[in-house]
Length: 95
Ligand SMILES: [Zn+2]
Image (cartoon, rainbow, N blue to C red; front, side):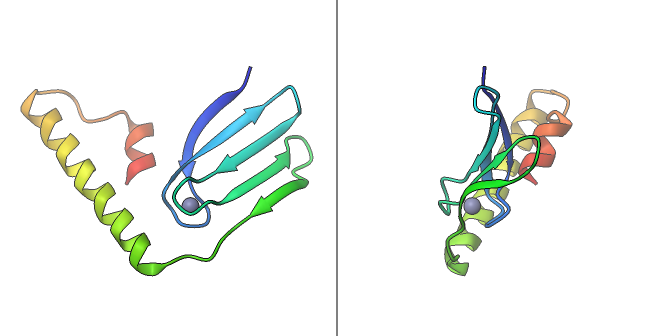
């Protein structure tokens, strides 16, 4: 069964997905924001396929601004409802 983890894209810093694919012994990291792709063999780290497009600074700045806005809103909701702040894992993934 594949496991999916949210990680930072090593190319643009946005939230990306890392898929652990035991059936093919591969790890695939993909980012929908910048189209980054990296497929490696899980035990050796050998690259099977990769694609890292160039980045547009204006686009990246807009993405970061949106992430900060979402985090502030979520923090406000947690505070209003007296909920302990987000799980540390999620918080680290967003900040
Ligand atoms: Zn990216």
